[in-house]
Length: 298
Image (cartoon, rainbow, N blue to C red):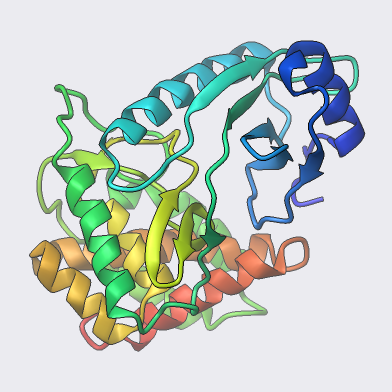
């Protein structure tokens, strides 16, 4: 269990709910995916669909509103993305053995990226560039950052960072990390909001060889700090390939450092929170922090 408020879900429950609410898939094989996802449990449905079940307990009415918003964002993302992305199929109702709404979406083929697997691939770095650059061209339609999660003002995350530092004292060099955050949080805005995926971690990127072939978890697509999607460079690439991304996107010094700041904020939470319950994602946090701390420009 990764969360204290985690809701139980298993293949038998999913099979019952699929059969009842999406009978067109009732004869398909149901398989839980061993991903490093932390927000949803993912179940593959045959060869063409997947079901996403929120892991943390939430009010069903609020949850269904979130799922509808995510479906709209997914549709918009897929319309503009240079690679494949899941499309919403439907939203399921709570059932006797699972108390919240859930979602069904199309399945995208590809291998899940890893923090180090393509770290020294210039081809992959350029694929990341193409993705970010394309998303930035999408019209925000007057929308602004919605003040939820990462993508606004860095100091808004001070309270969370204090919790992370406190819980990391026995596993990380917290004094050094505190000093780094004190520097990063002071960075000014680098420009107006642009459209961002919002969570370009390895688990959300599908590859084939050195090519990016798919992007997952697109329900947060929306306007935010233009530096937000630069977290991909810190989660996935070595120093030389990060420089390729920076040059190709023509990132200013402030924008580039803000990208590191968002990656730093995300990574700090991953290491301690998932140390025992999800070692893979905890290790991602460690590798990202190491890249940031070892970079002389940051």
